Image 1 (cartoon, helix red, strand yellow):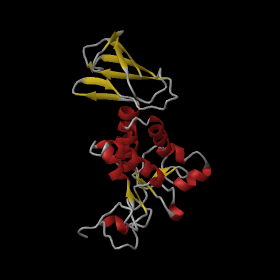
Image 2 (image 1 turned 180 degrees about the vertical axis):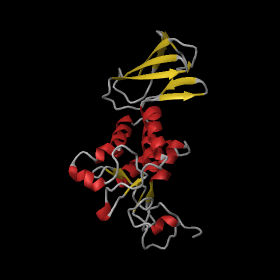
Image 3 (image 1 turned 135 degrees about the vertical axis):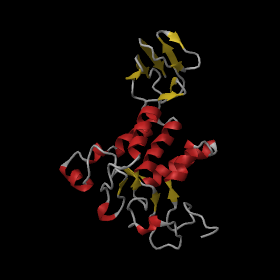
Image 4 (image 1 turned 45 degrees about the horizontal axis):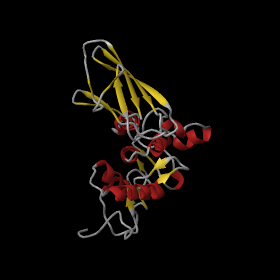
Length: 246
């Protein structure tokens, strides 16, 4: 319908949609203060810690006069209609990481990990899908709440990998250079990454010496400080020791 808002307090259904919230951060198009406000609203209305899911939108479409397309054909709380649509849930994690909120990013990463939904017999019977595959969706309402949806085919598994390696652990490979921007829990003291480029090996140790998520860092390559923090990748053999302090 022309001239109608969706994802607004004016709506009876879909008062909030996680894509608008998280992509205001990821796209860097949102005002700086409003990025934090939008993510706080998302956390308050879409993160269900009790059931371990991050909903796409809320409330689901059902009887309202807005016609958003095919998603309204799904039962309320199913797939894109108010369930966890896992692509969008991972974008939430990436947005939290980009804001430097490593505690939240890592907690949400852990929370939506399928293995967390299968720790007891009761939770296995509720979740009902594989504990080792990222599902495309998890139902978010009614007697299906917490049940996993389609598995194996979804591209959200790739996004989960990117969220963990690039945005939480902070390892970024781009245009032949390696750089680091961790967004980790403040209580993590250190961790290590092994990376191989061709025949060249990189042993990376990240030390959290200031109990911070990601603010400020010093990068050393074989003991020498790298002023811009970017390391040119070599593929001709050898072993390199990298130390990152945050």
